[in-house]
Image 1 (tube, one colour):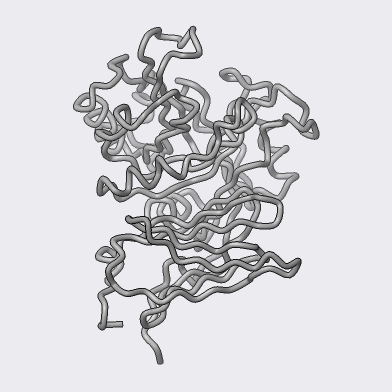
Image 2: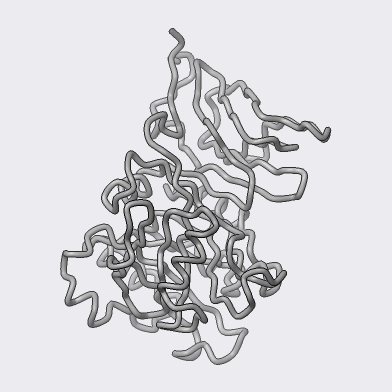
Length: 329
């Protein structure tokens, strides 16, 4: 039997998740109950309600086939506490709670950071403090946040960042951030990537400008429980998408194998300008591709694109972390 390293686990089930959502508790237009029902009706099984600065554990909304992740979105603005001007740079951070029973009262009282924009020492210590409380911290929408390399290159400790944010895409085509993800990886950050909606629902759900149902994360977990889902998130056992699907992803001997829904392009990005690629612009497209690895790739990540121009992304895998060595597989 050929040696195989599974980058997406074989066991478990893929659950469709929106990991960034706002309700009437902050500046959204749907109640938490309406938000849940909207996503449940569209085939989602996981929702993180991340209201601004207000931690929420909506466990009463959980069902056997639907999970609401306790969460909050916090911010650090450069100029004004409320970001009153649109040119104000800002850090937005989603905090997903893996241990809602731990320090529950402290979380309810408020866990927002101080307004110390650009103070990497403080921000990184805050992220570590949140991790110690049981949170996974996600770096949100850097393009929309008016940030450049100097604003994020010193950040450490995030488990993931948003590579796509559907609400920001509607705001000004600010949604897709693959360059920022690669820049963070090139700095040595071990972090995953997610796609989210960041929905506020100022438009009806069937309106072309609706910010729901555009970016999602497919989490492969053994069961639909908070513990199983959060463990899968922490371990990177997921991919994210605007539409296309990644069915399997593994290394067999010295080949990376990618199996997908029909797409036109399957690319393998890495830490240099090199890129492995397969393209089929026919109506049938591609559903599988194999790429020979030479062992000199520092990290690899898969990016696919379908005929509608929608992308899906795998997480980045550093070869030394997954146990791959040239000539030993």
